[in-house]
Length: 509
Image (cartoon, rainbow, N blue to C red; front, side, top):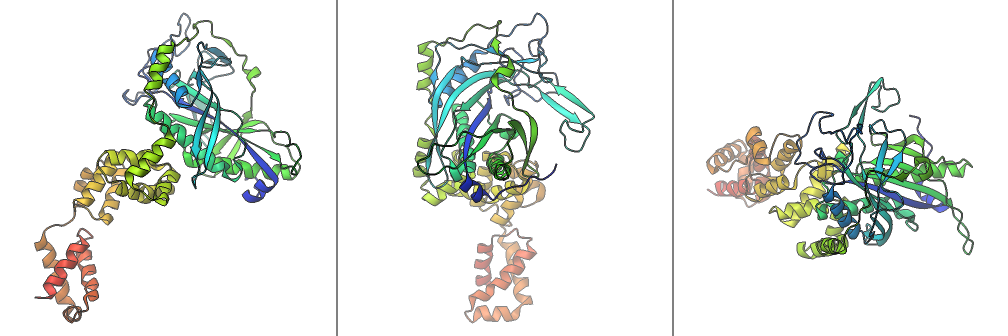
């Protein structure tokens, strides 16, 4: 893939105004699929299965099979619409969206078009630094997911250059809610951070509602990021017409959403500054290279030949149901953040560190599992975030809050030092088991036997008589050399503070 020319980000924002739009797809965690009783693979309680086994005739669109709407999916969709501040339609209906779907056997997707279940909402998003930004929501509509294609052969794993493709229909028919924003103006230099913060907010909402596992690396939550640029105009002049947009598809991490928006701004600005034109198309994000590449020309609604789904009746939720679901809504993300900051006693800087990392839910879950808030923040935004950055993945995908809480408890109980705990964390991330199992398998527990420590200390003091003399002369800083020798002898599996105490005691004898 040829490397595109990029313009400096700040220069691009001097010349052009970024205009954004997002489509976020949320896989619902219902027990069964949207229109059939096949197990839903987006629900972790359904065991993983071999390809093309979690299917029914409805999933495959076989003759004589008819779809039936999943009631729980409708309830989840209404709850999400309410949490997004949307109006709930008294009547909405499904439509057929047609184009070539190799991963939907019936060759169309059942979705909603002009009659979505939820519309006209807004979400408040907090940017780094505390700036609040309101994202306008056009609609949230129900639909089914497509299956999964695996392209075999070639170097990229994509269809280009592949020898053949395999189709797995297990995901076909998984319940989805697609959240579509209105055009977003005013993001300016914050555009990349706003993209990340918005998707993070949607993730927090659906997790709070309990309607999706929202694991981006598994495709439970996916973002299509639309971006266009329009030239700056002089003060008092009418804004320039909107530019041609691109849509970067299925970006699967918060970090990637931010990077993809920044890249597209720089790429489009370089083209426009040279008098070129932007092609309205989908783009694919490549995490390894930090680039987007061209997909297919972007279709408009007319190209999909929408028409009402003849096999499904309109969805007409009662007012009583809507109010029941409204009463059960959790607190809004902005209110939740204020509550957690106060409960944890974090400074503004400490709390913003957690928010900016996108790990608020992980820290909250870790404290709920028994860890102190400060310890949870330290591990998630420190060592775990460092490893995640090295691997190019979201930190929340590496380890569970429960395991982090167990690790913290072992450190606080004196079973592990921070140094040993980092080794244990490495083992947990590698899939070697829980912290306790890794400690046992690797033999990493702190040596708490004073007898073993004293033996190592006496040996170190005997081999360094000059150091012993300095300590007895009151130069206690000289004890560092002995402590270092003991820690080396114990392979780091000793509490340095306890070793220091014992060194000074032995030297005084």
